[in-house]
Image (tube, rainbow, N blue to C red):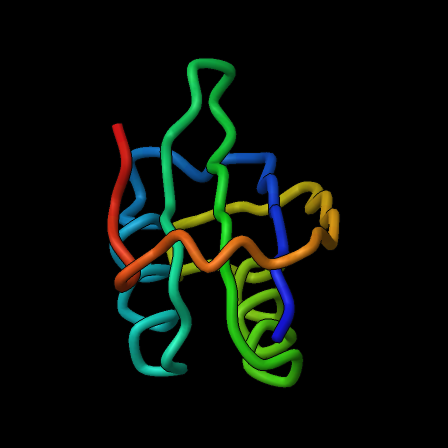
Length: 90
């Protein structure tokens, strides 16, 4: 079990980045959230098996078709098992 704190930079708000990330994370069986941040980035926190988190990271580096990802910061943390599923935060 791993936990990744991912910050995605670029044109990532207003392009369904959160919705697509949530869909992908749920398909992968991950738990956590996606959130638009005031600075224009998208924050994703995901917990689950390492190989599934790596798949989500790969998606975040590209994003949905309309997104223009310029940079992705990833920080691995100790899992906290605080999530029941994967959703959006505001």
